[in-house]
Image (spheres, rainbow, N blue to C red):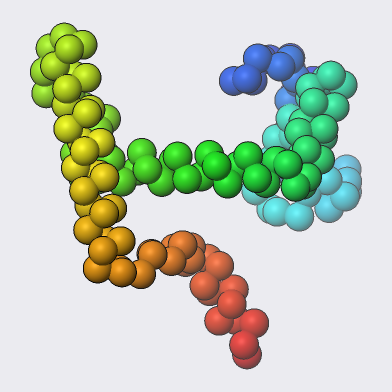
Length: 143
């Protein structure tokens, strides 16, 4: 049985992990109060400063200012994604910064040309992809 094993998670906040083995939990009768699964689970408990930082970050994400700034980031991510699809932006074929910069400028030019062509032909914007799990939930809600 392991309770309160201290460790540091990826972001660097200290935390501790507690695990309640299946046999011990079922004997004690407290497993149903802890988890709803029959499999073994571990619970990671953050220290108070890390917990409060996570709570404040979640609250900040619900504000209108955050949504506007995130919409800007989503646009930038979309541009980078399109650059990766058009010109393999994640890898360079050349050694040295001048040639790599030239490649990035050529990919950006190609991206602009593709966007101008789509604008001139009035091509409709792509819809956001619906994840399969969400589509399944929508289909189940109809029944």
